[in-house]
Image (cartoon, rainbow, N blue to C red; front, side):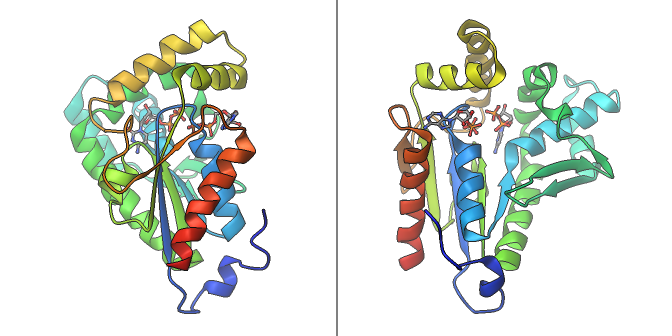
Length: 238
Ligand SMILES: Nc1ncnc2c1ncn2[C@@H]1O[C@H](COP(=O)(O)OP(=O)(O)O)[C@@H](O)[C@H]1O
Ligand SMILES: Nc1ccn([C@H]2C[C@H](O)[C@@H](COP(=O)(O)OP(=O)(O)O)O2)c(=O)n1
């Protein structure tokens, strides 16, 4: 489903409406893969907010900051030089000039990231960074797709499009274990525990008022993408 010739360059300075798309949901619902393609098809920027929490976790571990020391992690969140690459065809993450794309996906870091993401002062700091990046990307490319856990509710509650992607636990675990080449049981302990911890600070299991629910349990990847693209198209016509 191509957006034929409708790219960001054409929109720059054209006075066309800038579109902010916010997508939330638990792990394995298809947020990242769908968000990247939606951004790519429109020539918009893409923001993976989960990667920001992962990057801070990496930085704290690298700097020997104890993840259980909340104030120390908060200090680190204020000063770390996070560089988010927002091209949906090649999203990147760096701290200073050190690229950490692979490091932030390591299972050991994944196991620890909720400690950082449940720190409310860290979240306040990240929220400001995320809002600024979304604004900047919308201005530069005509639109932005940002995905995470609290984008529709806290970071960008006024976004033009707000979607909550859900899927049954069974479907999410099957996708993740396939992706990580691990067993469903090993994946369950990681994903379910992490979602539980994350749910203590963000509400991403049920759709908030005005947020459109896309349940991908029974959908193929292509059908999930088509469902989200259709919602985005509707908002662009408004
Ligand atoms: N509707 C779907 N049906 C089948 N597999 C899917 C679907 N959506 C995503 N996937 C696959 O599931 C895995 C996890 O998707 P991802 O986009 O990383 O989810 P999230 O960002 O919500 O954690 C990926 O391998 C992706 O290709
Ligand atoms: N806006 C966000 C994005 C992610 N998080 C948390 C949720 C997870 O524990 C981590 C990493 O998120 P990420 O989206 O990369 O996680 P998965 O793709 O589900 O593995 O950060 C958050 O609290 N708020």
